[in-house]
Length: 126
Image (cartoon, rainbow, N blue to C red; front, side):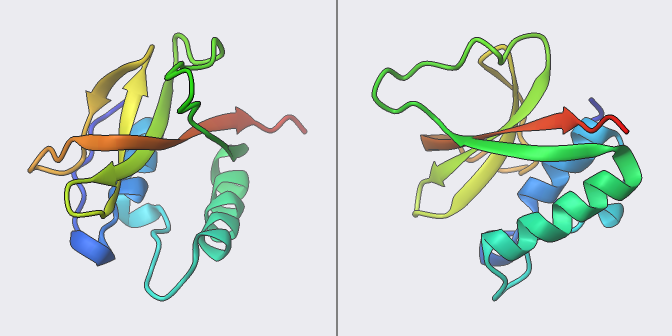
């Protein structure tokens, strides 16, 4: 993992793209980012097309278990993206490993106050 700092902020932010770039160790300019007024479904299709073509990967998302506040056992020994709400209600994404924060692409280091989703990369075998 090579930390990448996001280049766009607030509602036009590219923190998720910065997380992807960090984990893949590529330039943030190479990774698609969510553009307004695009919705998450359209963005994830574009992102997964990029991941498949360039890296033989697919992004897998699941909801964080808010009831037990527990990370699934699968989340060990690898980097993954966590997203959720920060102060002010904006969404933000950061990189975790083994249940611990390892990189926040925002220089302001806005703490996520409500974890919502976890994103893993899955290798596509041909």
